[in-house]
Length: 157
Image 1 (cartoon, one colour):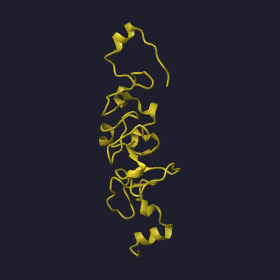
Image 2 (image 1 turned 90 degrees about the horizontal axis):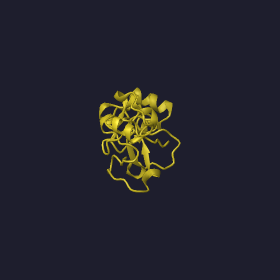
Image 3 (image 1 turned 135 degrees about the horizontal axis):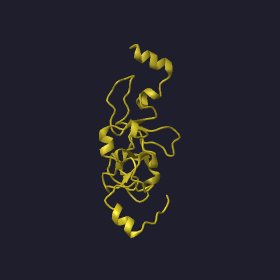
């Protein structure tokens, strides 16, 4: 991040404007994300927020990276940055040890939280503490072979 020096005259004339904390710009205000905890705002592209895949609840309950807490236990500690995984679809954070089954970190696979996964194979309700590397398959179905998936779809399993 860059540091911007602002004169007192500019500060007084711009203090009412919402500006992205990352880049300092007030452009494209309609797309800015406001942290539900601290109120700071950011452009989605400045932080890599997946705005196109977020539903309205995920958008209004969004937390900046300084405020992110686990969605399951709602806790955060000083050393959590390495233990929190972020959903690729909604940007919610989870402790790896709060997930079922516990996720080993670091993981090379994509991470989709239980609130975003909609399994098209078994169509069961995914619990918030569950996850999957595929948005269209639950963790169980994602681990099946293609022949097992075909059998499940045809009602043979």
